[in-house]
Length: 96
Ligand code: SF4
Image (cartoon, rainbow, N blue to C red; front, side, top):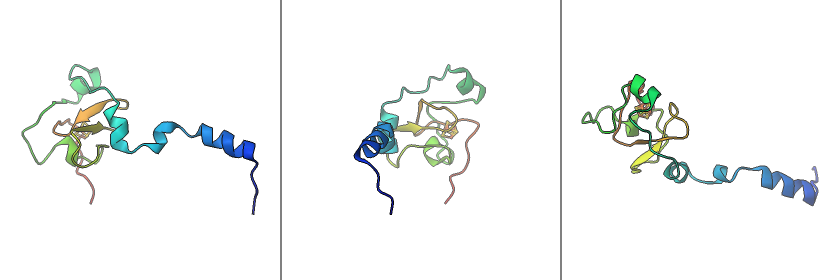
């Protein structure tokens, strides 16, 4: 079994980003909401609230929020949060 020095352990521990320790929803809570005027949002027809219950961000495969969250991250819009009841043309049915 390999032994690691205390110095190596401390250096490695400090290298782990703090955000990696947080649940996805906590990270999303710190992200600014995606603006509907964002060029990519406009290109993808993003709307902040859809009335189509069958296709919403919270049932999209690319949504990163937890169940019940009002917003969450999206793989298409890194660093921005999208509304749970929003929608865009990249909607993909959630697996499972
Ligand atoms: S890809 Fe579009 S529909 Fe899916 S979570 Fe992102 S913004 Fe919402």
